[in-house]
Amino acid sequence: MTRVIATVEQAAQWVRRQKVPEASWNPVYRALAGDAPSAPDFPDAASLDLVRRQLTAPALLVVAVEDGQQTRRLRIGLDPAAVPVEQADAAQSSQWSEITVQEVPGRIIRLLAEAEVELAPAQLSIERSTDALRLTSAQSRTACAALTRGLPPQEVFAAIPDLDDALRDALTATAQRISLSLTLHDPSRRAIERPVTWSRLWVTGRNGLYRLDQPSNPSLAVHPVGGGDVLGTLLPILEQGLRFAGACAPSGGVR
Image (cartoon, rainbow, N blue to C red; front, side):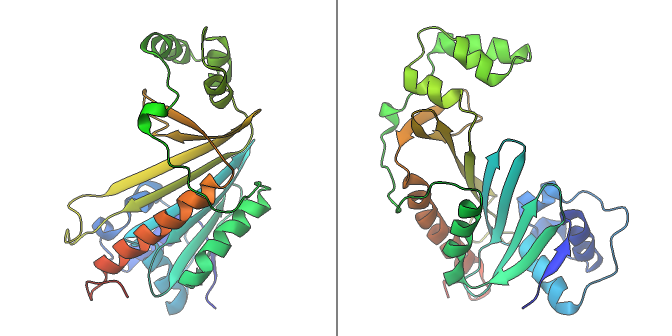
């Protein structure tokens, strides 16, 4: 089985040397690529094919667990036939490998288990947007002003008056943070005209797990959820990504 140890910058240099247009790269890797001042010589053909397929994946699923100063991350180039994977740890070069579609859920569960995430059977919590916990307009203005002054988020949200207890718990959480994103792109523009990214974040507060949708949006929506919500979200998103990748394949259909 092909395995490669390399930084994203080194992998990007190898692919650039093969004259692969950057317009065909997944937007996540276009943003990460940068420049490697001293990339090693070309790897063997199988290794080069592995990193090229990863960088140009039409559907890139990213799963990350942040715990204090440590982040464990998997970037998975979804493909109905064979799936390239980059396991990235901030302090080390990435490990690039290939797995089957059937192995993808187990690989993600292994990452979560290594990060000591408390897993529960998959159960997606269906929540109405109208039931979400949100900051009021006045609370949002207060928080934005404090954050602009450089105050730590936990300190800012702990001090906001009349804040819902569950919302305060979610916004001041300092324990594990789990993120999931799916970035789709189709250079041929047959499936979609422009890249699309979906993302979701979970935080662990004192009183349980919270799902945060659109975490960078001022109208942040927070839902208290059960422990099965992470895997319950993952499975349909994985299926969606595989279907998109199949639609972008040369055959034009799911394999």
